[in-house]
Image (cartoon, rainbow, N blue to C red; front, side, top):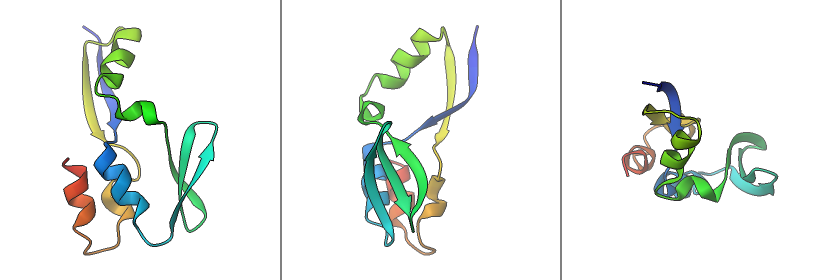
Amino acid sequence: MNIDVHAHIIGPAFYDAMKKIPGVTTVPNRYGTGILKNGETVINVNQDFFAPNHHLHEMDKRRIDLSLLSLTTPNVYVFPEGDAGGGRASRQ
């Protein structure tokens, strides 16, 4: 059995919440869309990430049987302190 113990996920609700943070901008790039905070790249997002079976397809390609997922960079730390929106979005 092949187990991936370091895999990340990002959902559309989290992506949309990140785009609303003050100082965050989005720019098209070779990966899809770059999310920048104060001019620094936080994460690159490809719309394929949001397809329901995207991660399963990638697992099949790599012959991975089990994948342990965590929220991708920048996690919830990109949200201003006290902003509950990031926590809610991360759970969707």
